[in-house]
Length: 249
Ligand SMILES: Nc1ncnc2c1ncn2[C@@H]1O[C@H](COP(=O)(O)OP(=O)(O)OP(=O)(O)O)[C@@H](O)[C@H]1O
Ligand SMILES: [Mg+2]
Image (tube, rainbow, N blue to C red):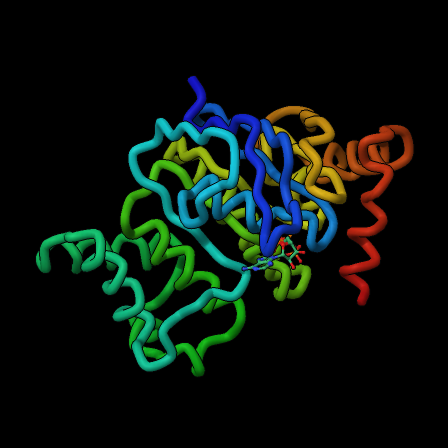
């Protein structure tokens, strides 16, 4: 069963068409990576899918119970400790005080935040810790669907890998579904069951491709070979170098 169905979605900002004829679905327990160059409308599509932005046209059907979103900028409240940042989401979700404490402890443990980390303010946290708090905050409300909007772009390679492992494990353990936006084809190939490619001008999904195995079982060699293969031979990835150029810039 699909937990998310985007059907013929389109959007425009200030009269300029950003997205057109977008069809994309995510099945139960599936992580779909969405790749495409900067400005092609990935964030807009995620916002439309999550109901934050009303599409100009098309239909969105959601069969999940509750979603969370993790942004590129962790967007923590600077005046609140890590614990308060997570607790705020729980309060917004209407959780009772007693349950909140237990939930906070459980998610902090899950993302390896120590009790000392929880007392720190965002300015005292490293980039990785920021993202751990953001992930803990998202998980705290027990979503069954997560939108990831390039959450690890600012992290260095080793840290990024650790955070990817955390996402892979969390999603597999909890049978979560999700849409993971990224510029990085290697990241997409590591994390996702399926990789969808958005047209440079947002004119539809060019196609989707399935790396071998599952995110949990896929080896580094399989990821490497798959990425090399599609970049060289698969025409729908031909604009992927636009992506690389942006990363270098
Ligand atoms: N609130 C807004 N008002 C007007 N134009 C917008 C707004 N948000 C986005 N845009 C424009 O819509 C287009 C798509 O933006 P979007 O942020 O969805 O792209 P993206 O693929 O997520 O880019 P990036 O990879 O850089 O994050 C861009 O041209 C952007 O300038
Ligand atoms: Mg974006």
